[in-house]
Image (tube, rainbow, N blue to C red; front, side, top):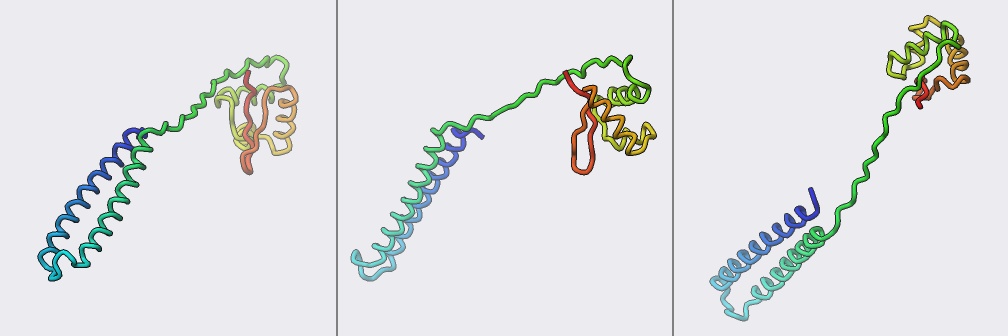
Length: 158
């Protein structure tokens, strides 16, 4: 909600509260006037006056808060847009068969796959996949990113 509308809402609530305070004050004065036997010197009138001023002070504070909210500028939103990068074309002629398979799997998986999944697809053990990925990282074809206890293998972008 914009600050202007929230401010108007708070101002409206304070006006409604002021009306209730006025009605309550009027009703209370009539009630005290009918029941108090001391007349105009009854101490109840002093109590009503104090309660009324306290209530109106609270309403005034709420009214000021509403006006301040109305005229303050809302914080600007920061929107960060990321540019989608294209996966660079890889010259597969300089790769051996296992390296080509890794690149083809990554291209099929939109450039990223868990290392464990890649290991299972290729049927290679942990040591073998690590050495294979080390070679491809050295050739700047892919990179491994640590995610908790797993690695994600990602093709390098342009």
